[in-house]
Length: 115
Image 1 (tube, rainbow, N blue to C red):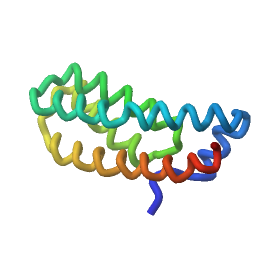
Image 2 (cartoon, helix red, strand yellow):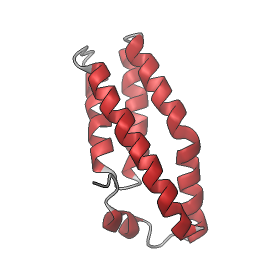
Image 3 (tube, rainbow, N blue to C red):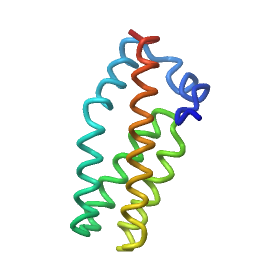
Image 4 (spheres, one colour):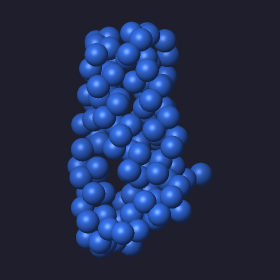
């Protein structure tokens, strides 16, 4: 099952030049691994303020790519950061990590259409 809603993705980027779309994808691909590491570190240290900030940031970025499942789990982690909830953080991170990596793979495959 795809993480990206391809129809929504195409609708969202319909007025963008292909080169811009490819560049936006590249920016995400360059950054996402570091973002995940930062979120994991904030969970490991129970730094809820950082968790809130970085989960919110990732949620906003993935919203651009029409990936609601990734957005949803990032929002869940953001909410746990806001509420300082140490409940299933590692489990949620593992889901986020898996889905974000799947998103990256789908974006790599789609990028060929925009290059």
